[in-house]
Image 1: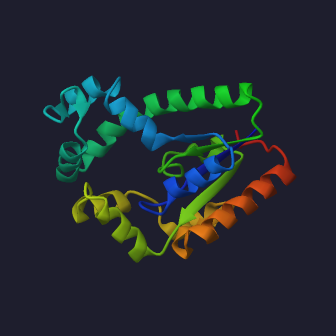
Image 2 (image 1 turned 180 degrees about the vertical axis):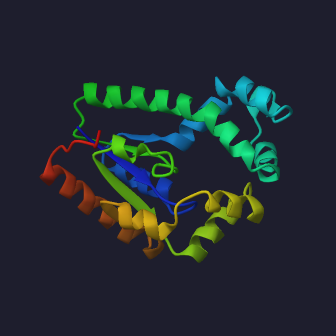
Length: 201
């Protein structure tokens, strides 16, 4: 099975690209969706212990947590130490299930793939990209992202240019959905043609 890591900077179109792989019948794991589930489950009491007051009715309130993180840059590392191991556990379960089902390709969407050293766990890397002004507009249009939080998170990531340079494949979501979908189709064809690879140790 070829395991593809999908990443990109904030609001680069990662989720849109992941959905396009899913539309082609390829199983997709989203780290963000895993976090969302954890925030209403196993991670909630752990996050509350670290950031008192951010959990409401048993669920982490993301806007409240975002404000706490914006006020204290070190808080990001505390949060990641709580959440990342739980997300990795969920990812391992996804990989095992996809392999057991005989899937040729599986996609794992991880926003901080390069930053966390996860790239070595994947056979190929796909990076979603879009022009900077489009990415910023998308992020702020979501409603739960302030300009301050956006810049804080963006500053902690590798640049869009560096991610593209490290990618095996790039999907430009700034060119429209049809172009992005065509790029995903070409990537799938190339992966199937090349056959399984082996991630670095």
